[in-house]
Amino acid sequence: MIIRAIVSGLVTSIVVASGTVFFCAAPACSEEAELNISLGGAVYEPWDGETGHGVILSAQYALLERRFWIGLEVEHRRYDVNLESDFSPTYDSVLFRGLFHFHPFPDATFSPYVGVGTGVALHFTDRNGGNDGDRRKYRRRFSPGTTFLGLAGVQTLLPGTSRLSLFGETRIETASDIWKKRGSNWRYDQVGGVTGMLGLRARF
Image (cartoon, rainbow, N blue to C red; front, side, top):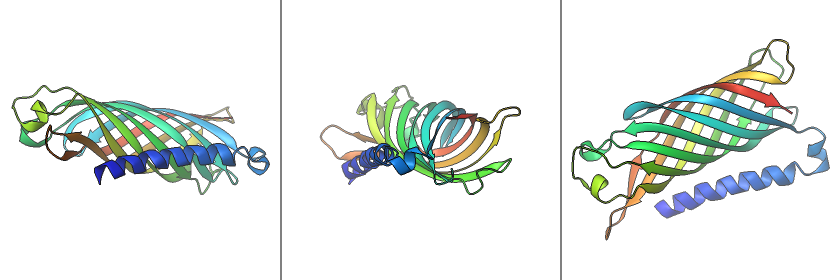
């Protein structure tokens, strides 16, 4: 079941990427699609752990009068999570997602939007801790995982520009860290949380 979740997240990302490339290669799309590149700094608050920080880069095509956005993003973040047995490792996570936005009022001065994203995660952890529990003794430094999030944001054009926007987002995420104890079953840790992000977005 866990392997299926990883495969499902990976397949979803590939499908979103393939669909974006295929759809935006069509003449009808190429005439109206606009590429949006976003870069933001983030503060990450895991459900159980210490506040971390990250950076998020995304590329999305805006379609159908710029109301529907579809694309990909990559995120890196560093944070501490409190796991069972008083084990609190530091995570360096890289997450790859397919991303969808809905912008109901794309021409508003302050344009709100909502979205969802899903994909796969690569977690790199230290094993420093004050115990000798399974999670410290048996887990490897690298482990895979999945990510699914919902988001709400708002963007506004910077004064004197027509294609550069300031945006802010709040994201609520469930994310898994999947590892295996030698000679035993796969284990699952929840490393999701809430993200606040502020960044710049360029429209091409």
